[in-house]
Image (cartoon, rainbow, N blue to C red; front, side, top):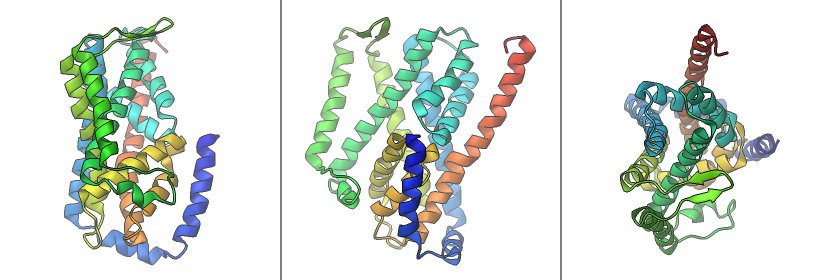
Length: 301
C-alpha cells in the first residue's frame, strides 16, 4: 500500500512537471541516442547484473557453502530482477532465494544470513560510493533542495567513509558477532570485506552509467554528477517501496537534472527501465518457470 501510494503521488507530481512535453519531443530525444550510446548502455547493464550476482557469491563465501556458480548467478539475477520490479526488494528477493537455495540444502537460518548479508553489502557499497561522490561533488544534494530537507558536504563524505573504515576495523580486530535471539551475524573475514567494498560500488556505478550513456552531451553535467543523482534517486525509489520505483525515480531524476531538457532525461530513464528492469524481469519469469518445472519433475513441488 505504501508503494502504491508513492506511485500515485509521484505520477501526479510528474504529470504537473512534464505536461509541457509532447510525444514528438520524446520521440526526438529517443532518436538522438546514438548506436554507441545504446551499445554502452547495454554493456553497463551486463556489468551491473554481473556485479549483482557477486552479492550472492560473496555471501556464500562468508557462509562457507559451495553451490554451482551458474546456479548462484541465475538465482541472484532472478531475485534482483523480480525485486527491482515488484518493490519491497528485501522481502520479494528473499522469497526467490529461499525457494532456490533451500533446494540446494541451505537451512532457513543460512538463507536468512545470506539475505541480510546481500542487503548489507548493498548498503555498505552505497555508503562507500556516496562518501566518495561527496568528496568529488560536495554540493550534489543542492539539486534536490525541493525534495530533501538535507544538507551534505565533503565533511559528510568523510563521515560516511569513516563508518566504512570502522566496519573494516571491526573485521580486522575479529570483534564478537551480533546476536539477536537465535540469529547471529559475524564480521566477515578481511578478504570478504574487500570484495564487498568492490562489488557494491561497481554495481551502482554500472547502473548509473546506463542513464549517463543514454543522455545527450548538451547540458550533461558529467558522469560523477549523474552517478550522485542516480544514487540519491535510486535510494529514494527503494525506500518508497514503489513497484519498480515507478514515478518516484523519474521525479527525483528530473529534479536532480533540472538544467537538462526534460524530454532527454525522461528518454534516458525509459532506456534505463527497458534495459535494467523490463528485459531482466521478462527473462527472470522464464527462469522461474524452468526452475519450477525441474522441481516438479523431481517431486519437490
